[in-house]
Image (cartoon, rainbow, N blue to C red; front, side):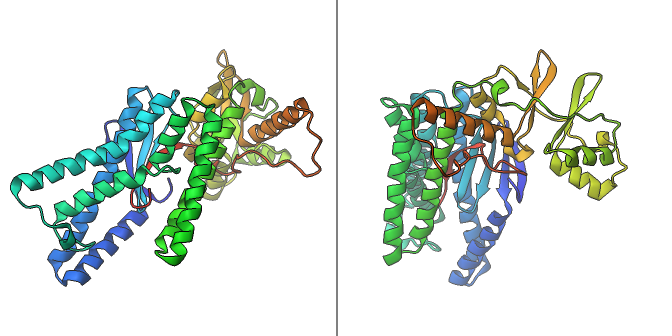
Length: 395
């Protein structure tokens, strides 16, 4: 994710902190200092905020480790001011597995709250709740309250909170997965309308939550509809078969000519019949700015790339695509380059399938141009990485 700093790798998962997190950390410290007018109060605020996001991080690791149990890796975890995001490589295959993964995050918060509460009771330091506020009171006791809030809020039955995934998993035990998602998304958007209406008369923060829930529900429904449409397709059916390749010894000037001569934006780089790299559009432009058009392709190409098999199911291939590194992937058959899978080609292929589906059901032709499926245009395809468990103050 852009504007994020990597702070470490824990249990094989990269952990990032968004830069805006540091700004919010400073604001919380300042609020505590203004309340107590002392350095100690400011430090207490910073410690509380760090403790809060450690709880959020553990929440995300609950999702990640539960998913790992089913053979699903987590690409990374990012801490944001609104909570955390664990990006799974793919969704669990069975509703029962998704249920376990979705509940694992809130369960971590319950365990943390129970452990802290037991420690306070054992030490006799538990204070009445009315003595607490956002910036004052026992630090540990405030963390107990926050973890209870995180668990309960995340279990609201609305995407992208964990409760939306729990609802979808329960519905999918009896319904088709896509239909279960549509129903869960509709329920979530209904809650968003309720939040928005309440926010107009009470707390404006509810309006922000409503927007967050509405967008999350729509994105989840669109992503599942796409995966459902790709369910019986192979990569070879949607790949681009007419394309140009470059040699490592070609100059960037020649790459520019190839780009301007047609609609191709990303170029596979081959040597002796083998693919040795990819020259994406963004890298080409950056290399032109840094090195000029006389530089060689070998100096600008990406050598760390992932290829797809022509016979691989298209939905599983999509699940492995990391949008942070661009969407275009070379397609191989028996080790030979036979095509490219691009966002544009995939969008066109889905529109063709939609048209044929209307024909199959003998629907009358529409005069308006059909909308493309949710494929986000270049230079990046957006966040198709599967974000699981947006935990935090807003979900």
